[in-house]
Image: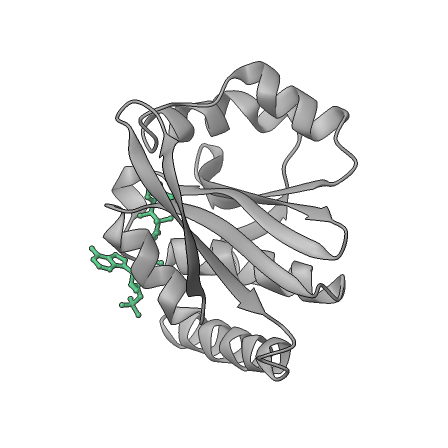
Length: 181
Ligand SMILES: CC(C)(COP(=O)(O)OP(=O)(O)OC[C@H]1O[C@@H](n2cnc3c(N)ncnc32)[C@H](O)[C@@H]1OP(=O)(O)O)[C@@H](O)C(=O)NCCC(=O)NCCS
């Protein structure tokens, strides 16, 4: 996992994080998730792995973003990723994605997949930076508003150096963050 210098921290999501996670989720997606969904994901779903990005502030720990994946039959499926609006565009989403991908690599998957709205060009740029390629379209996959999903994947058989490349990205990001202090 991505070991960020203080005051930032990436760690597993807990049930106590759910209210802060739901606030970010509501500000991030047109169809927000429910409290029950996260409770199920954290307490029932053995296949789910959720992480949060936190920062230690004067008043305690502030949640900046979250992300999660499922591991199903050798395939990692990224189910969600979001950064609180005020913190976007500063590399936080990249930290969350890289952290998930490093955790995924430890599980030796064959494939990493995700869906993204066709209009979500910001997220698509982030995924392209992390070498995801479009392999299909799920017609009208999303509701409110209805929209196609692009199905993106990293095929580890096609990119055998992928996890080593992620480790290089990790070093570069941690060094840049330490230099910036
Ligand atoms: C998608 C999201 C997680 C990205 O997080 P972020 O912190 O804003 O992104 P970062 O600052 O880490 O940027 C990482 C990369 O994303 C892309 N990106 C970020 N902001 C962008 C913008 N305004 N325009 C185009 N590309 C952008 C770039 O590729 C960027 O890499 P670069 O800085 O080397 O150019 C965040 O915007 C978000 O929470 N969006 C709402 C929820 C969402 O759409 N989730 C994805 C569902 S599939």
